[in-house]
Image 1 (tube, rainbow, N blue to C red):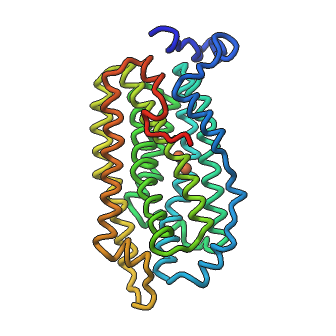
Image 2: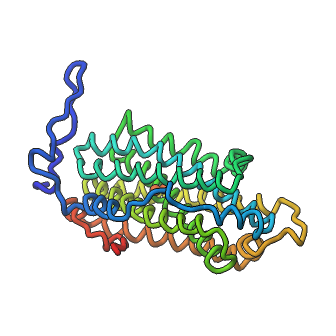
Image 3: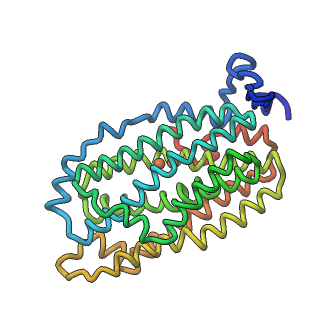
Length: 335
Ligand SMILES: [Fe+2]
Ligand SMILES: [Fe+2]
């Protein structure tokens, strides 16, 4: 596979010991032109701290400028995000292990930064909840939504932690499909779209949360592109049968988990018998009106198609070329 894909950096077992074969940074050096090293550089450039976001106006808006239905809607969706961020922060670790075990050192280095970003997102959402003074009942929201429970309490930890005992290409594909394509790709991006639409156009409240969502969405676009990159790399290295595996698994998770999960959010919010005066504009648009709900579902569908086309293109590529993909080829904006 040539120097570009020199995988001579994994580990070997010797009796009771595990040994690194060698260190890349002191032998051939890091490969700056690989997709993961370019992502790492960009991540450093866009670093931000969740401790520095000001939520004081959010607290005021929460108490004075929002109707009960809009508060519940925001609280429910944000609770799914908070638990989701903790989940992805905890469960990215086995993928770092798998990449390193395969000798993909630049990928492993980038993922350490990725993990830090997920921790930052978790801190940000928890700080927001504490700032508006609404931490009661958020645990229940994550259990009430059955597809959500299944995805975050079962599927993600199972798929990711399987990499410890068997970091095979097939298992990497399943891990990345559920984590980057379903959780970060379809669900999280649809969520950011709903948030942005809400606070930008429908009800301009909660500037802290709005600002944070924009920053998180930029981080997540890198995470998703990394998922697409790893999928393409595995397919190019280990054959097209992995592409079929990806297709089948992705499609089943979209139909059985992702779309039902979004529908369930709507059902839970509609099950509350709101008095007319308690309904706010966010609820009226995104949940009550078919137009708003369709807008969200169309966005989710569109996301699905965009991700799919990236992988489809990569199937015919050689691993050396996949590793050299440029950021813009994965829809990453560098400004
Ligand atoms: Fe995140
Ligand atoms: Fe992420």
